Structures are given as C-alpha cells and as structure tokens.
Image (tube, rainbow, N blue to C red; front, side, top):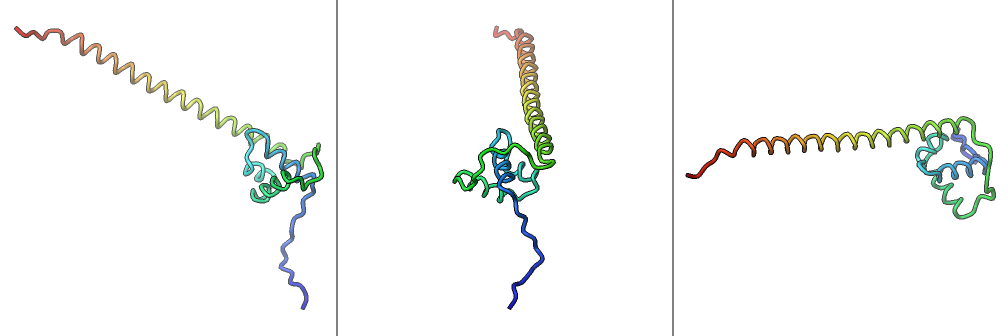
Length: 123
C-alpha cells in the first residue's frame, strides 16, 4: 500500500535560522511569543529550539545574518513594548498625582472646618 500524502508540507528551518531565533528570544524585553510572531513560527517550536539550544544540539554558536524582515519586526515590537511601559509609568504617575490632589483638598477642608468651629462655649 502506498504512503498517504495529505498535501501538508513540513517547513524545514536551517540551523542558522534556529540559532538566531533562539538568541533573539533570550534578549532582554523580548518574549518567546513576540519573537515567534515576528518570525512567523509557532511559539512552541521556538520553545523547543531553546531547549535544544540549551542542551547543545545546535552546532552553530553565532550567526550574523538575520532572516529577511524579521529584524524590522522585532525593532518595531521592541519600540511598541517600550512605549507601552512608558504609558503605564505615566498612568501610574498621573494616578499618584490625582490621589495627592484629593488628599490636599481634604486636608484644606479639614483645616477650614476646624478653624471656623471655635465658637463653641460651655458656659
């Protein structure tokens, strides 16, 4: 009986590609998911490559050439992540300032209430 051919084509990646993807995924502020999306691969595959890399299954150590287009996508993703962190930081600062403003208004109100209530006498 002949082998069944389902029509699915398995993508083969070079060791250089795998090593570069793994190295990118280890850079600060980069996630496995983000690198996988930029390279158009499944995050599980990248995780598996990371494990193989740690176990020394890849013979290559450093690769200079990046896959086409992936470098730009990763730069954009890094910039987006940096901006998201900055937005979160600014929102937190804004919340703190709002709380401080409410606190000051409350303190002013307490001071004005206590200074106007000195007319109580117990004669």
